[in-house]
Length: 335
Ligand SMILES: O=C(O)C(=O)C[C@H](O)[C@H](O)CO
Image 1 (cartoon, protein in one colour):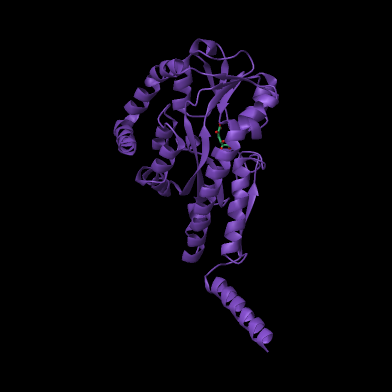
Image 2: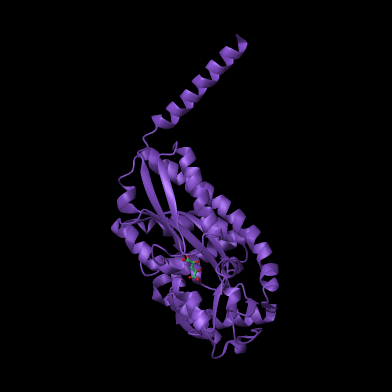
């Protein structure tokens, strides 16, 4: 008797739960979620986490499918697909958004963030939100920021411990004026290229080097075509999870709420996963034969000095107040 009551009670509870999930206004939807890195990367793992979390929240109604390796196009192509409503979601670099919202270039300025804690506070705070909100009028919805990480320099020519060692190195940079100015300021020959073309460009020698976080150097197998890694940590790079505004405006409030909650959960997962992977990556890259150079604090100071030109240019391009606001928020954090 007791057993029968228990199973009736459980069934009722389950029905209640299902009724709960189905009470919400979720329609069966397929979400194409594009990204540029490999499936086995911090980006790919977080997209899978998001998809599983969203399915759980919506009783399997909202199904997100990850498309990695730039299979839906490079970051800029995917941004345009979202704006046109031909794709629902993506994650990509804020650096490739400067053609749409130039203010995002502030996150590309060198040596701004001292650590991940500062980056999280600024990105998840009013400053990061203010920039994300500017995407709405451009047809994009900025949901959350994930961590790409602190960028370091690799090349196939020589160890780089001083700026002078960059002389004449054909260095691939993102399609972004701050990066072009910064590396020209360091003495390198900066060549902007989409990420999706980078491995081949390194393999064929079209470029000699590139700069990315150690997690990307590992997941994109750059160690197969690059011998030297210099720990410059010259920029903290965020990723941003985006949705198509055209698609977003057609969703119910419940669906938007579920996607925002899954996005927030995926952010926390991604940062934790990314930092764990980053801590292990250097030993992995060493084991793959890469020669690691730790750049001295004195040299980092010289690089900071040399990159002021890029900062001034960005300020003169109408962003002086934006830089001041960011520096103000950082000072508050450092008190
Ligand atoms: O292009 C780079 O170097 C990047 O850091 C870009 C990102 O990783 C990009 O999102 C990959 O598509």
